[in-house]
Length: 252
Length: 252
Image 1 (tube, each protein chain N blue to C red):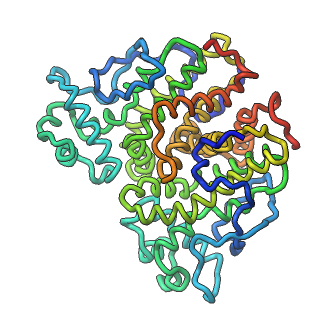
Image 2 (spheres, rainbow over the protein chains, first blue to last red):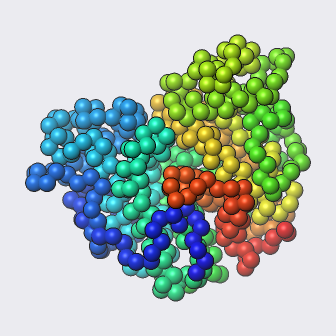
Image 3 (tube, rainbow over the protein chains, first blue to last red):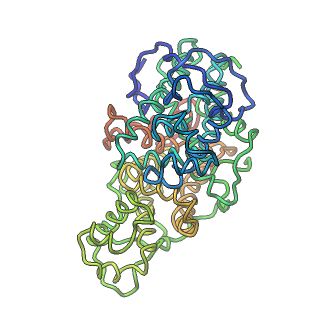
């Protein structure tokens, strides 16, 4: 196999299994079902920002607070981010936040964590289907306020390096690992040529999503895509990348 | 031809020539040569924000001011943007700005305009080469402070819709038109199948660039790419998208 050269190649390059994942509470940051999958969860991972131990859990409140946290951060950045502002936006008491998160940073990292969405991506099936599902899930994630919050995070990296460092370590790096493993497993199963550059492949799938969201969401002649359109779009994109039907073997 | 369905399909869909371009002053917002091309300019287009008529031109100062404008906007957004702040950052007198631009918005739109970079993309040659060159030029553009400023612009769209509207009209829309025309001309020349979806194709090229920049620039194990690496990367990306060498005819 050629050494990987895309953006994903900086990440630890072993082909071993993903690090373990701790299953989240239901509804907590969960993305809407992509319609393609109802995935079996496997493996567990330490969440980016675990709620304080022993506190009563109320997934309804937690998701509401995370949604508010994404919105506050997307609009005002870290300079305008705190328990006060998030509690006001979520319409909950400030104490509910102090009970659940150690700091505003912990709350923000949990709100931006993509792990719950990852858990919805199929672990079985062809690499083609997993990539389509990955794309649809990313499209869902970027299309909402999470997308703007993530863009904001990359901008704030210049002025808040310690915040970005925490975000990179707890959210981005594990996501890159898991995306990479989709392609590597496809190579192992013989569905992709052994010299497939997984970095390039993931740049293309992730990039098509970002480009679609970045440009498409502001084009007044384009509305946000429906679930069916998202699946259709990602199918076309992945088939083009994999040179299907002339190229790669698909088991689906 | 199938109706185009990618992000670029909302834009006026005629296959006519690009709108005219007015050639810029040398060095004014020009991107470094990509190494692939020394393009013949053809056609002219009204710049996003033309300097005031009849004023003496000093491309050296204008580029310095535009660079400062991108940096100020990338760091502080529209809330922190004005002739004062930009003049201070550029180390020039405020009068130099009043002489050249009608408003801070005009200055910002010129600073973010991609037209000078577009002028460096070959108009002759295969669609494959033009797409590679487009990708390398975009990579150059996004890699610097312009990339952060553009991301900022998309975030500010939520809170400064009138600013974003002007940016969309004067910068984004003409760029989409020109990118689209690269693919459509390739179809006309018979280099691409007639049912090629140019929206998908451009999502993939532009997206790979954005993904590479968004994730790659913050990965400490990845440095900014050199010119040679950028060309190599975009060649691999475009060849994969076009399914070369098994797919499309390349004249290059």
